[in-house]
Image (cartoon, rainbow, N blue to C red):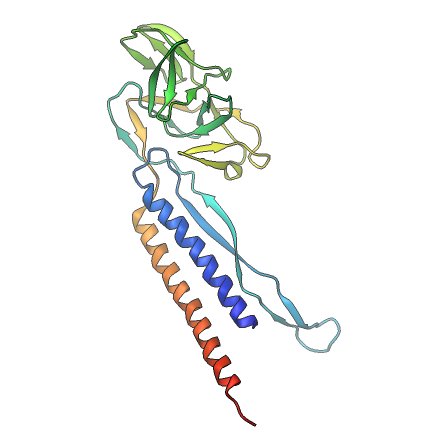
Length: 250
């Protein structure tokens, strides 16, 4: 039965891996998206012979493979030039600060911004209508009927020549500790640490493209399919052996 259990864990691990690859491929055109990869670890070992008790080498029986983590690759993607004044990207490490209507703060590399038209004024928002925050974690109001929006390298926003705020650009001690919140957004966790001010430059008129490498993902997909096929074959062999055993006659 241990053979079947180990093969089952292998199938589940490769299924998780293929799900991550499929998600990467689906987001190959998503601005600011960071590709993910699946890491594995071996499962618990059962000790059959203890070398500390016997004058022989140790003997252990493995119990399969487990998914250890799904890590993101935070390398910067290429720049897509759009020419739009509200399209921005960060040159270097850092994240834009975004707030939902309930005040929840998330972080993103996607700088596709727009201006909302609300009863209490016009605000700088992202593509999903969430508010872009300044360096003091406040919403950024855009003057009504503003004709020209520009941003300097330090994130200072001006509307028709008048300063309206400075974008909040932050970074984290451990980026791998960030929790994905969907829509290219991340949440801070204890593992990531608190957000720290970033000195990275802000550029206007372009977006950071997804850093998904299609060739690498296809290679990973082939490897995952081969590993899945091998685990499936192990299940088939176990079934054949079990059937042979059950049909034995004394």
